[in-house]
Amino acid sequence: MADVLVDARRVTRDFRSAGDIFRRPQTIRALDRVDLTVARGETVAVVGESGSGKSTLGRILLRLLDPTDGTVNFDGVDVFALKREPLRQLRRRMQIVFQDPYGSLNPRMRVGDAVGEPLEIHRLAAGADLERRVRDLFAEVGLDPSYVGRFPHELSGGQRQRVGIARALAVAPDFVVLDEPVSALDVSVQAQVLNLLADLRDRRSLTYLFIAHDLAVVKHLANRVVVLYLGQVMEQGPVAPLYDAPLHPYTSALLDAVPTPDPDATREQTTLRGDIASYAGVGCVFAPRCMHQKKDDRCFSERPALRPFAEQRMAACHYADDPAKE
Image (cartoon, rainbow, N blue to C red):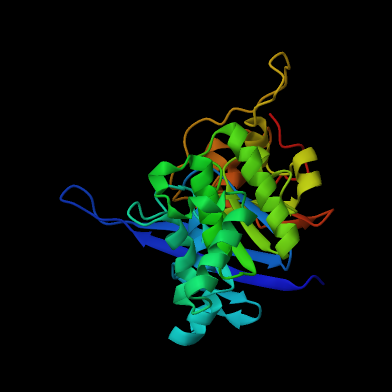
């Protein structure tokens, strides 16, 4: 069995919405009994539309959010049982790269200071050694070390995201959550940043949780894909079989939404009707939008179990044995 670094079991997270004179407060379930394992050195992609619970899951794994229920173990240690000092030590081993490369940086702080701050907080470097290590980090992520004295607004979006990556790497973590790290960048810059992340993973033996809404972005970086919808796992499995023959109709729809580089190419495309929204029923959360030809009353009355299939795959669909097409 692979060496498991992150092991999350039945992770559930509820949020309480604010009420007003017209509406009562409501409980919104962002994650619903999610199981997730990430092996050491593996890149697991978590994909789904906005509102599917991807970022919430990433933040719970890092203990930036508390779960309503469930457990998270990091290298065999219960993350939510740690007190202040052991938790501070664990923070060195798990970091995050945020989606917005500008919003995640203090506009009044020079980017070199932003990268050096984690080294100071964890007492890993000071003085000339701190300056040297910051410059080395800039060079490692493809930035000119002379940029250390610049402010975020003086850099491009791609350069700012490289600063965010350097900051995450400053304390030499084992596990990095990449929260849609290229979605705010131009397409040409996305490829450069993805290549950088792959190179850093191989060079530093990093473990990634890559959060994205676009399956095309993660295809060449991830080893395994987990598809989330309304806080539930719809499908998961190795990249190649999942992309070649998705088991769940939601995965099919996400793959059909990936643009093709050939403008003259024609292909059958699945169209999802309606938007992602809360589902109060007892059946499959995807049933209201599902386009499977065998969808029936069972889909609305019985929640499908996440069950195993060949090639280390799992899917939560009553009719996953059949082609998930119209």
